[in-house]
Image 1: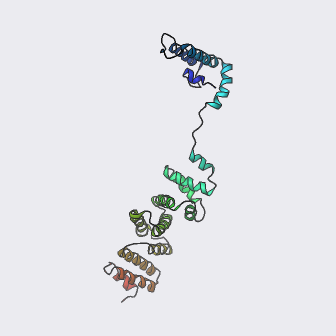
Image 2: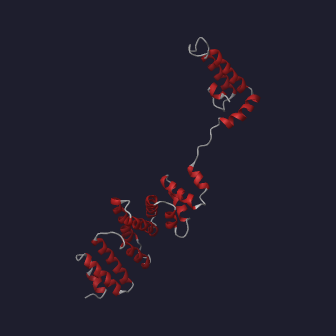
Image 3: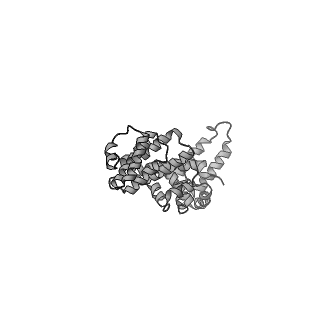
Length: 263
């Protein structure tokens, strides 16, 4: 089927007068006195006239357009996000949508979808991705949670990624940034009214990761302080001894030792 709109150089929505002007202009272009010698003006003119006759008649144009729209009309561009949205009830596509949204500034939508992954979203998220993708996108999820001051959830994701990094290094020298996030959450972001059991769990998890001895000493000291607030002096003393072994010069231990009954 010939594209008469293209032949006349007008859009499919062109009005009658625009078609007439285009026809006159094109007809002049193919006139023997104007057209290059390499052209065949007669053939060109016949084609232009044919296009004009079809498009200038409302009845004939309507019949032509019915077929033209199926063959030449622009199809809407494929939207990968719309495709994923249409399948977001399936876990596989939901996770892909989370990743897509995180990369395309739909952070709010991504976190809403993440929270909808079930009771243990981290594990569902990890199950649907290979190791590297989970670590990359998991870090972005954790960072978003951190920026929104949802420190407990951020800690959990950072910790899961840290465990994987310990087993199979991927971030390598960037790993120190991840450890710094975990330390920042435990040292500066936990509120005074956060449950001690939650704080204790976080500190104990830090002991499973690769920190320098001085950092381990600080962690043991923080654990000792928590045990003292709970009246568990024996456990506090145990961690204070460990802190002293790791860093004999660690400050602030004398009062804690006295509270723990260490003389």
